Image 1 (cartoon, rainbow, N blue to C red):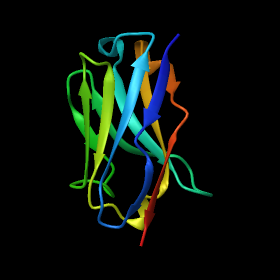
Image 2: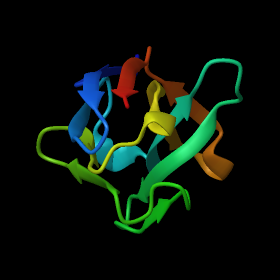
Image 3: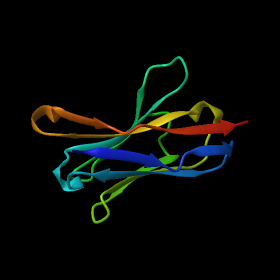
Image 4: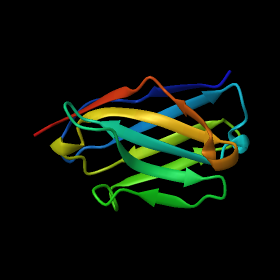
Length: 119
């Protein structure tokens, strides 16, 4: 059974940094087509933050380009999100996501970690 556990969230002042981690268990990270981070702010829809494919191609939401970096460690079965120059509008619950199979049919989510950026 695939499980994703996020960590690293917290309260930070605007301009600060946080590093989120996602520990994947149950399958090798190499078996997933794509891994990503999403976020959901209060009363807003969940939105894509960043993704990284099995081939290493990354993609970012325009709102975080140049500030956030997604990476992965295949040996540790981990995915990371380095967040710099944080803004109050980055406040949200951040979720780790992985997909595998034809057309990314299998879709897995973590429980989320809260990130709060104070002004």
